[in-house]
Length: 205
Image (tube, one colour):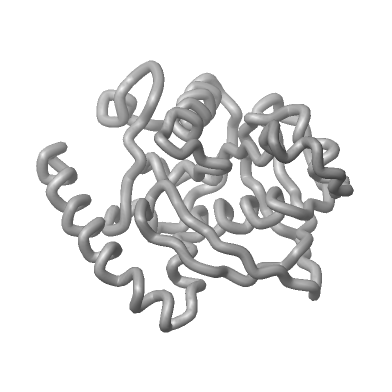
C-alpha cells in the first residue's frame, strides 16, 4: 500500500508542511489493519512525540500518506494532574491507551456548545490562532487492535480529534481562522509553501 522507500524506514518520518498536496486531499478509508498499517501507526507515534514541541495529535496525511488514520496523546501533563478536572467518557476510556492510533475516525455528532482555543499544527510551524469548535463530540473509530469505539469526548481530546479529522478531509486549522488572523499568518504560510516546494524538488517529487 505504501512506498516505505520514500518515507524512510524504522522510526521518525518527515512531517510535510503547507504546500504539500497530501494536506489538501481527502484520505481513503483503511480497509484492513495489516502489518503496514501497524508499522505506519508506530512510526507516526514516534514522529508525533519526537519534536522540539511534542504534538498531541498527528494525521497520516501529515506524513504524506492519505489514509484515514490519526495518532493522539492528549493525556494531561504531570503539572496538570494536580488540577481536578472531570473527564469525559472518551477521556476516561482512551487516556489509559495513549499514545494510540485511531483507524477511520468519524465524528457522529457534535454539541451545540462551543469552545474557542488557540491551535497550532506540526505541519504549520510558526502559525497559530484561535479556532472555535464544538465542546463535545461523539467519536466512532477502530483501535489498531480492531476494537470498535463509540464514545463521547470533551476537553483537549475533542479539540484534537476535530483538528486531526479535518486533516483527513483536506482541511487545515488555518482555514478556520478569522480573516484577521489569516492575514497575520499569511507570510509564514507562504514561506512554508516555498520551503516545501524546495524539499519536494530535492526528494525528486
